[in-house]
Length: 111
Length: 111
Image 1: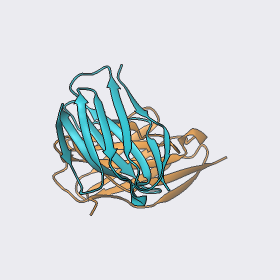
Image 2: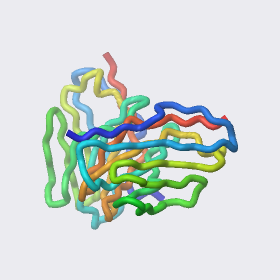
Image 3: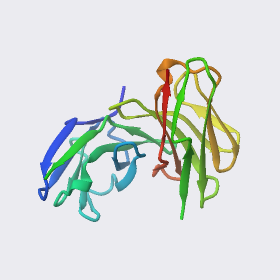
Image 4: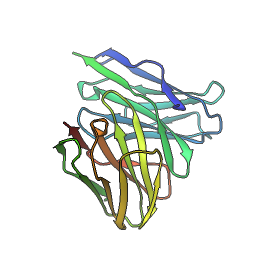
C-alpha cells in the first residue's frame, strides 16, 4: 500500500482566502518531502520541498509545515488565486532517489 | 537550464498493438530517469527507474518494459498492449537527489 496519504480528496476555497492542504505519512524515518502541483493534462510541477531537520519552509505564497511528532505535512497557499486550481500531491523520499506519492487533493478556487 | 520532453502527447492504440513512448532530457548529464503511470484521479505509480545507460529497475510486474539506449533517453515499450495499460504516462528526472522533475506526459488510450 501507499505510505503517503492526503486527508481530503477535494478542497474548495474562495479566491483570496488561504488554502491548507494536509498530508499524513507513515514512515517516521522519512527525511525529505516534496509538494507537487498538477494542472489538468500536464505533468506535476515541483512547488516546494522540506527536509526532516526543518519544521517550516516558505516560498512564494506557499509555506510547508512538517510535524514529525504526528507525521503530518501541510501546504499553505496564501491569497489563493484561480491559477492555483489543480491537484496537489505530497511525496515522500523512500530512498534510492525514489518517491512515494499520495492520491492527491483537488483544489478548486471559487471566484 | 534543464528541460524534459515526451512524445507523443496523446496516443490511441488497439489492444494487442505495440507501444513505444520516448522521453529525453536536455541540459544535464547522467540523470536518474523514471517512468510513472497515473490512472484517472489517482496518484503516481513508479514503473521503472534508471541510474545509467542500460541500467533499468522495474518496480512492478507488468506488460511494459523500459530501455535507456543513451544517457538522456528513456523509452517505455510494450509488445502487446492491454486495455489496462491505458493511462497518463509521465517521465521524470533527477540528479543525485530525490527531487524529481516531470515531463508533460503522454495520454495513452488502449481501445
